[in-house]
Image (cartoon, rainbow, N blue to C red; front, side, top):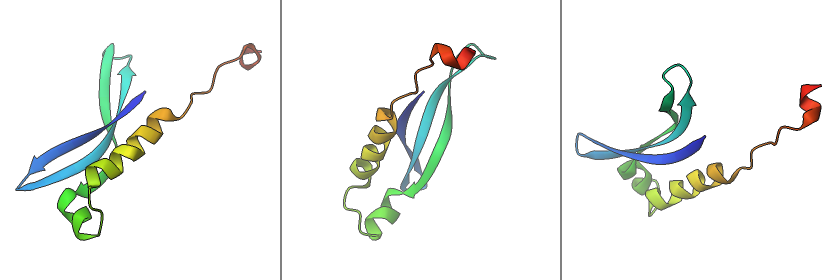
Length: 77
């Protein structure tokens, strides 16, 4: 599972969202779903965040750095 920041232009505004990528066994391919919607860049600039893309990219990087739990043989007993 991996996360990425998606930018979408709609009605002269740029909206941000964090998406997660995962494997869908039903379709047998990767798929994406919205993990967190983040409003528009203009809204964040008005609220005092100078560079919202860089700010939320750090959050995405932190989500991607979370180590996954390793399955041990004890889990199967």
